[in-house]
Amino acid sequence: MNQFTFLGREKMVLMFFMALGAICLAATYFVEPATMVVMNHGHEETVSTHHMRFWSNFLQNAVFFLGMSFTAMFGYCAFITAYGGWFTGMKRLWEAYALWMGVGLVMMLVLIAGVWMHWHHLYHWNAHGITDINDPHYDEIIAGKAPFLNKYWYTFATLICVGVYVFITMRIRSLSIAEDSAQKGDYTFHNKMRNWMAAFLPWGAFTSAILIWQWMMSIDAHWYSTMYAWNVTASFFVGLLSMTVLMLIYLKSRGYFVYVTENHMHDIGKYLFGFSVFWTYTWFSQYMLIWYSNNGEETIYFLTRRDQYPILFYGNLIINFALPFLILIRNSSKRKFGTIGLVAGITFFGHWFDMFYLIKPGALINIAGSNDAATALGSVAGYALPGLLELGTFLGFTAMFIYFTFSKLSEAALAPTNDPYIGESVTHHVI
Amino acid sequence: MEGHKDVLYGLYDDEDVLMDAITKAQKDHLDIHDVFTPFPVHGLDEVMGLSESRLHIAGFVYGALGTLTAFLFMSWVFTRDWPIIFGGKPYWSVPAFIPITFELTVLFSCVGMVVTYYTVCGMGPGADNPTLDDRITDDKFCIAFNVSNSSKDEIESLRGFLTKSGAEETNIKTI
Image (cartoon, rainbow over all chains, first blue to last red; front, side, top):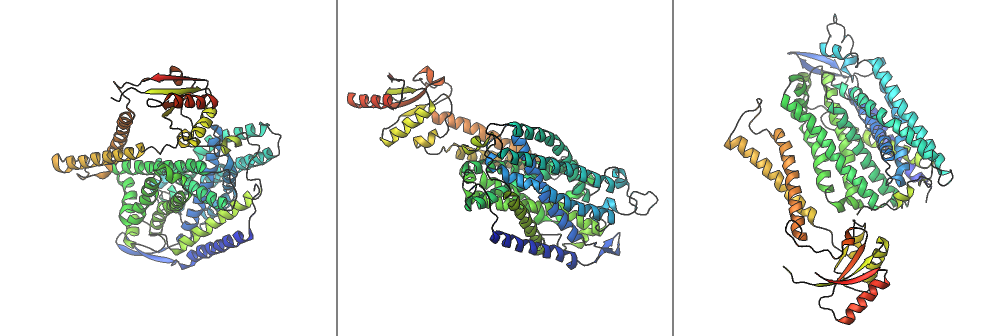
C-alpha cells in the first residue's frame, strides 16, 4: 500500500479532539479571573490578568508544534546533506511534519497581532513606557535590550525567518514529489534538493536560536542564557522523534510503511535516547553555571522555579531524562515497538511539559509585576501545573497536527521510489 | 592452557557465500568451532545462533559502580573528611559533583569493559593467539571445525561440505 487513505473514522476522532481542544482553549480565556490581588512592595495592588492563561497556552502549543516541524525539516536536511539513507523510507512523514510550519506561522501571526494590539501581556518588554526614561514604568535592563526586544524586530524576524523556512520546505517538497515521476536514475531532483537543504541548514541553525529567544525566553525579559535556545531545540527534536515513533507504530498497524522495520525504529530510538541525554546536558550546563556563579539577576530565575514549582522542576528531569535514559539504554528496548512506543508517549508529553515549565512561571510573574509578588500568590490554577484545560488544549493541538500530517501524507506516495537512497533504506540493518 | 587442537578450516572469498555456508552447516547440524572474517559481517552472529553479548550488562554495572564511587567519595570528602566552603555554597553541593560523577561513570564503564572483553576473549598482552591463516586478516573468510577427536571419515565429510559450499581451499592446522 503506497497510497495513504485518510479514513473517515480517523477524521471523526481527530475532529472530536480538535473540538475538545478548541473548547478547552476558549475556556481558559473565560475561566481565568480578570483581576488578581497581589502584594507589591508591601501594599496590595489589583492587577489585570489580560487573559494570560489563554495566551500562554496558545503560545506554548503554537511554539511547541512549530518547533517540532522545524526540527523535522532540519533533521531531514542534515541527513540528506550528510549522505544518510536509512530514513528515506519514512521521509514523506517528516516532509508532512515540516509543512506544518506554514500553519505555525499563521499562529505566530496571531501572537504578533497580539503584540501590536496589546491583546496579551506575555512580554514585559512590550509594556507601555518601559523604555522611556521619563516614564514611571521605566526599566533600565529592558531599555538596554530594546534594540532586540521590540515589536518591530519581533514581527520582522518571525516573518522573515519562518517565511524562509516555509518557502524552502515547500520547494523541497515539490522537488521530492516531482522526483517520483522522474526517470529512474535521474538524480537532478535530488541534487537540487541537496542545494536547498545546504542553504537551509545554516539559516535554520542561526535563526531558530533568535526566534526561541524572542518567542519564549523574552517572557522573562530580565534573564537570558545562550544555552536556552539549544535546550529548547533539543526539546523540540525529542518531541518530534517521539511523535515519529508513535505515528510509525500506528501507520504500520494500518498496513503502511512495511519497509520501515525495527531496524529503523532502533535508529530513531538511538536518536531519542541520545537527544534526551543532550537535552539534559544543556539543561544542566545552563543550570550549573548560573548556580555556581550566583549572580542575583540570573539565579532568581532558577530559584523561583525550584522553590515555587518543584513538580515542574524535578518532574521535568524525571520524565525527560531518567525514564528515557533507563528504559532505552538496552539495545532490545529500542527495537520492541511496545517499549519504544511507551517511552515515546512519555517523552512526547514530557517535552510539552517542558514548554509549560519554560513559559508559565514567567507568565505569572508578568501578571503579578514582580518575582516576589508572583511568589506570594502561591500556586495559581493553570500556572503551577498543567490543568485539565491545558491537557485538553494539548490534545486539541496534537489532533490538529496529526490531521494535518495525514492530509499531507495522502497527497503523495508513501514510498519515494525514485529517491537514490531508497534501496539503502529498505535494506537497512542495524545489528 | 588448553591442549593443542586440530582445526579443519575452509577459506571463502565472499561474505555472502560464507553466510550461505553457515546456514547450510546449521541445517546439517555441523558443530562449527568458529568463524573468522576480516571485518564485522552484519547478521553473522544471528546466523551462527550466538546469544547476545552480555558485555553491555557488565558495562552498565561498571558505570553504576563509577557513579557511586564518585558521588559517595566526594560526599564523604566534602562533608566528613575535609569540609571546605567553595564560593559560599553548602558543603554538600550536589550540582558541583555531577560533572565528576559523569566522568567517573564513563571511565569505569570504559576501562571495565575493555578489561572484561580482553579477559573473556583471552586476548591482551602476553596472550598466545595463533592465527589459522594470515589471509583471514586481509581478504578471506573462514569457517573452522574442531577435528581433534574426529575420525578420518568425519574429517573427509567435513572437508567435502566446505568444498561443496564454496570454500576456495581447505587445510588442517594444529594450534
